[in-house]
Image (cartoon, rainbow, N blue to C red; front, side):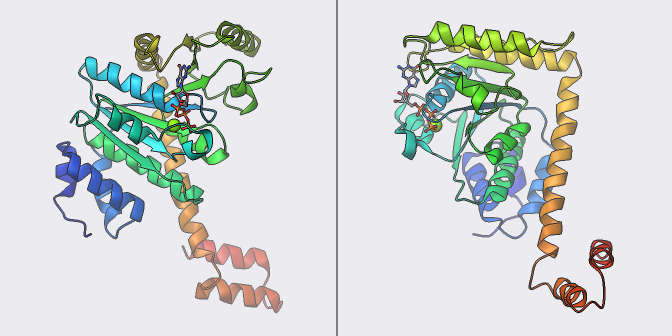
Length: 312
Ligand SMILES: Nc1nc2c(ncn2[C@@H]2O[C@H](COP(=O)(O)OP(=O)(O)OP(=O)(O)O)[C@@H](O)[C@H]2O)c(=O)[nH]1
Ligand SMILES: [Mg+2]
């Protein structure tokens, strides 16, 4: 597949076929994809980017599906990126299948894409961030990122989200899983899903206690705890309201701008790191030469490193 020059415009007009093609280019790193992404980047920033994370099987995909249905009732378009259908392990259905089975299938206001990790974590982060760019530029009102909350790369990638919901479920041991997984700091909203099960209120009070101990500073966002039953949709309209309230709060308090800057910094840093590491590979003549030099004591590591960095 080759990249055609009109692709950026077609993505921007929200054409599903163009979005799909562009995301394939993003995953395959087709030659010329960076130029199209650069063009698209200028037209981003309007979408509200949500992150939904939590332990495997906690109901993230079911929740995202219910959330999407609610947003569609409000006539908002939704782009969904599911990072790694890890459901093979938890027995949950792959998000795409879930949506395909639901009323949302064939809805032109919904676009869904799964990105497989394939063990390449750097690649995962980049493809995911670029996918957000594509869906944002395509005019999606809301972009939802579903990632399982295990592994640093999955957590890192959530820094691209503006509002992160961390999903917990009742009865999975003594401690709230979100705390164990180190997801507490990134939660803008806590969701206790499977509220139809015993122990949901106990999980809520455990979370409340943890949040109390974390001692919110004056002027900080007050992290809410939302009970949901994703399978029946209970609590989902309220969750949408929480996301909207968080967005409004960020706008009013300069937090949206602060997160945008953080996101830009992260993206530049990740890309630059990738480029630098690529230059410092065995097989690169200037790198091999430096290695030979230092090994033969004709040069020292610091001088060699400085020279290589300056050459970049
Ligand atoms: N009882 C109950 N079951 C639920 C609820 N939400 C989801 N489930 C079930 O929990 C199982 C896992 O749901 P998924 O939505 O696939 O969970 P997930 O977190 O996306 O799973 P992974 O992507 O594999 O990590 C499925 O069998 C769902 O039907 C709920 O609110 N109540
Ligand atoms: Mg899932």
